[in-house]
Length: 333
Image (cartoon, rainbow, N blue to C red; front, side):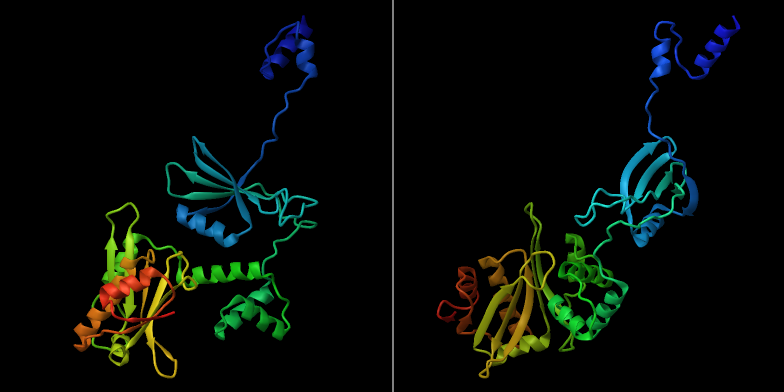
């Protein structure tokens, strides 16, 4: 009698329903479950932005999962070396360090939790980024005025600094640009407000101003922005020719940067303006030609009417030029 009561108590404590027929099978086959992790609070943040900034500054963490719980959201991060492969190399071991950001429901505070494991990176492949010595040398080279990646590599070679991969160097330069100038992405509204603040033409000959057109009627907005100064527009009084072309080497967002100007008898190029447009259509080039002509009349009382167009074979440039000036012109390719 005592044996059966002890057996019932044992089964009751394990929450296993008692059945004499399958009791043997229940005791032989254990339930396979994941091993629970214990986290301890190691820090607190006042808000979510502060927590996100901390994780970005720390580096080395990868967001693994995000769970919505009754206590609030929990973001679980693993060490970046806890991967199957890194840079195509399979690690011989894995780092077991884990952290969690707990966004408490009834508060703005965010708790930083850790599983207590130390970082162990022995035998693991490392990221092929720039070393501290290389970063310091690259920063010094950029401060001297050298910006292009291949020229930076040549300067590092001349200084005896180990050369990084050019892909790693470009990634580091992109991070520097974003840190210095901010994000390269601009919203339609921010760009419009930026132009509105610079529409006024000041007395100073070298203060830049813009002339712009924003069309938001279609699904894809059309943008035409012209950048110039009074001194650059004054060069139209000495010019009978006009050069026009677009380049894609000066931008981050894929829009063409259109350059217009003239050359003197020595072959020196003098720009009239820069312009950014969403495309290279006849309407886009006509806008820029007409705006230069209008500014020459408005600021200098000069009727600018060039007779020579120097451009490539794009019909959009020639058609835009003829609609702004005259059909009677000489085209030089």
